[in-house]
Structures are given as C-alpha cells and as structure tokens.
Length: 638
Image (cartoon, rainbow, N blue to C red; front, top):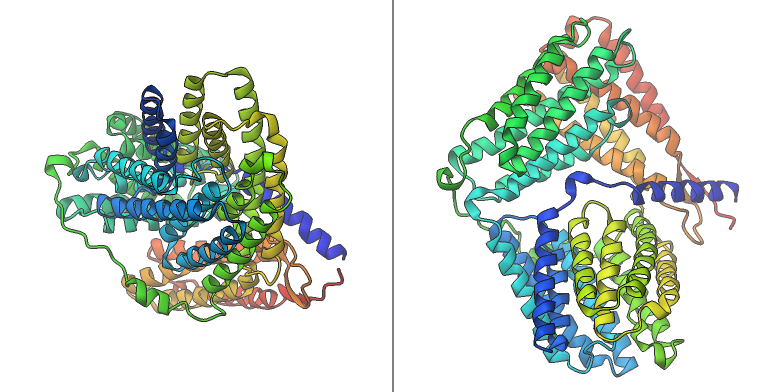
C-alpha cells in the first residue's frame, strides 16, 4: 500500500510539471491571430444583421477548424481542414437530430465515440478531427444553442469551417515556404533551450523530434532543386551541432574552469534563437550576423584542450547555417518547386493493420465509447431541466481528454482541470464587469487566439482560451454563464474522474516498456562501438548513430511515462518500474553514447585506445545487469 501511495504522489508531481511546461517555440501566433480576426468579423457582421443564430455556429466552425491547422504545407493543409469541417458538420447534424430523445442521444453518442476513437488509427490529424467531431456532437446534443435547427446549424458550421480554410490558405503563399521554415525555426529554438541549461537538459528529446518534424515538412513542402537543398542544409547543420552538443555535455563537470564553455553555450543559444526568429520573420536577419560575431568570439576564447576540437566544429556548422541566411533566399520568385502527392498507405490498408481486438486503437475506441456513454448517461440523469445547457459539459470534456495511453490521458486530465478552473474564473470576472455584447465578442476573439496559438505549446493554456470562447459564445446565445460557474467546475472534475476511472482499468502503459527500450539502446550502443572499433565507413557509422538517437528518444519517453503513470485500479501483479534507477541508467547510457559520438565525430577509433574498449564493455555489462532489475511485479493489496 505504501508503494502504491508513493507511486501516486510521484505521478501527481510529474503531471503538475507537465501542466506548467510551456513550449514557447510551438506558440502559433499567426494561426491564433487569423482565427481571432476571422471569428470576430463573423460575429460582428452577424450582430449587425441581427442573425446571431447563424453567426454563433459559424464562429464555432471557424474556431474548431482553425484548431486543426497543424502548420502543414498547402497541399495537405486544406485537405486536413476540410475533412475536419465535414466531420464537425456531420456530427453537429447528428447531434441536432437526437438531442430531443435521451435514448437516441446516448446510443448515437456511444457509436460515434467508437467510430471516431478508432479513426485515431489513421494518424494524429484524424485523431484531432475525431476529437473535434465528438466535441461538436457533445456541444449540440446537450446544449440549447441551435439544437432544434440541426441542418441550419450544421450548414452554418460548415460555412465557418470553409471560411477558416480559405483564410488559412490565402495567408500562406506557396512559394515562400513558411511552413517548412516555421518547423526549422522551431528546431533551432529547441536547440537554443537545450544550450541554456545543458547540464540538466542535455537528455531532452525535443530537439530530435523537432528536427524530424522539420525534415518531414520539407519533404512534403513541394520544394525542389536549390530551394530544397537550402532548407535541408539548415537541418544538416543543426543535426551535426546536436551530435556535438551530446559529446560536449559531459565535459562540463570535469573542467577546472567551465566559465569559457558556459560563454560558448550562452552565445550558441542566443545565435540559434536569432536564427530561428530570422527563418520565421526574414527582416530579423541582420541580428543573426551580429550574434554570429559574438558566438565566434566566444569560441575563440575557449582554449581548454578538452573539447577544443568539438567547439571548433560546432563553430563551423553554425557559421555555415548563419551564412545561409546572409545570402539570397531561394524562395518566392526564385523558388524551385515540384508537385507533391499525399503520402498515404490508403485507408483500407491502414485499417487492416488495426483489426485485432488487442490492438491499442481498438482498445481506445472501446474505452472511449464506454467513457463517453457514461458521461452522457450521467449528464442526462441528475440535471434539473432549468440547467439543460450544462448537459454538454461532461461529454465535451471527455471528448477532449480521453487518449489511447495512460500517460497522455493523465496529463490531459490535469491540464484540463487547471485550465477549466482558470478559464471559468476569468469568464466570471469578465462577464460581471463587462456586460455589452460587443465586449463579449472581443472576449470570444481573445479566447480563440489563446486556443489556437497555444494548442501545441501548453494544453492547459489552450483550455483557458477554449473555456473563455465557448462560455462567451454561450452568453451571446442567452445562457446565464456567470450565475452557475460552480456547475462547470464540478462537471469538469466529474468528467476527469470518469476518464481516470476507465483509463486505470486495464490501462495501456508506455512506462512498462522501459526495460525493453533501455535494453535495445544498450544493444545498439554496443553495435555502434563495434563499428567504431572496426573502423567502418562513415555511412555505416551515421546509420548506427541515427538508430541510437532514435533509441534514446524512445527510452526517454518511456521513462517519463513511467514516472507520470499512476497505479491501476484492481491491478494484480502489475509491472512496477523503479523510475529513479531507470533515469540513472538512461543518463549513464547517454554518457557512454556521448563519448562514442565524440570519437566518431573527431575521426578517432576505439582500437587506438587499448584500454577504452575493456572499460566500455565492463560499463555496458553492469548497465545490462541493472536494467534487468528495473522492473518487477507488484501485487496490489488495495
């Protein structure tokens, strides 16, 4: 029992840490501004024409479809947004058809939740569209806003979604390649964060993920010839710099005077942050050259024999990337483009891969259907007829926070509760102070901006904006929102409890795979060392290094999941992970990896150091022994 309580306390601390983490590089200001301006214009015109019954569903369509704008190239962006529009419109129509019949409402909700939950198998974009569709069903099936006009509301919402799509496409000219440049800028910003605190954050996986996302974005951007080479060169320089940083990280503690290395890292952070800003906003390019001079001066001031070659190479790669910005940019009229076809294996083939009842997506569909059904049943039961506009809040919350794995779900629950609480408090204050409809429309715009801008930066902040927008839209529709805010808070806690209850029954745990991922990393580390020892060609070494860095990302994610996943309900012989030991093992593996990367980058060979290989092999054998003891079964007595 004591161990269970300790695991629960640790999980709560980890979840709180996730809730308070803001990924500044992922704040989508353009998308937020675009959504806010479009939504305010729609509501303002509807108010002027006295047709808020059309303006509100159109505004909801604008808001929801802008949430699906995940910074894709043109050829993919409009498809994603229009599919989301269709899903939201059909869900709204279905909600209006069943809203008057509680039994039909319950049955339709369960079936729709199962279908849209299974749609997650088609990819993250389908998962997001499914969540939006289910949220629209919850909103219109349990709300008095337009539920008697299902066809009209669905059409108005569809028009709003199409309008949002047109505005998004019109705002991103194809040949300027804003999307891949934004992804590359995010990668450089993540690298800057890493440099800010290398000693405690050098195990971060965010840079690797950002580089991978940027590479995919370039692949689907339509760039060709010199334009594609130019974009990929930024990523190549950053990837080399990342490997060098892995090798530099462990050097800090042994240095007698680390101040010079700290100056290099600080200058590196400032330079790469300026480069990210320049890629997103070209007029900031002169700042890059100023920061480049400071970075080069810091590198020149590093004279310690330990790591001087690594610092010299870091200077070379980042100087090359900065000079790419100083030259002419092969975009706009100078761009080279090609036709991009959507890379998809097809819906049928993807569905065939996930037809087993043990499949994680099938399990998610079943669990979502059960949870959503419980939410609808609870919301339809105890509510007084005067509070019928509240019946959407519990299912709506479930639609947003129920995720396939336990790690994602518990994080969403925590962020949803915090965000809703803050949002409800803000709405109550604003609506009591500001009573005019014009001011409420502006508040809806602010909520839309926060929702769309912070969707990928911090979900809790996004929920604050969404709560502000949805409740203010309700106030425009005549709902006495500020008078019953306590019901919203209670309903959010109840929805979080329902999701936690179903998520903790036979959960899908990422953390249980810790030993497997660490063992794979250990095995691949030994293979990498063997290739270095044998003097294999650079192409083989590069492939082995890339595999190891993927292993490291997977291992770090599973360790983080193991720390945040609470104990399951009624679990017997559950796998219990020693998180502290797992983190220590991962850190030691990363330290060994950094040594090998340094040998690789500097062109040395393990056979040139007779004692290096026996020491390395002894260390790996000790790590393998400790990995075997990380996980054990724990019989629950609770």
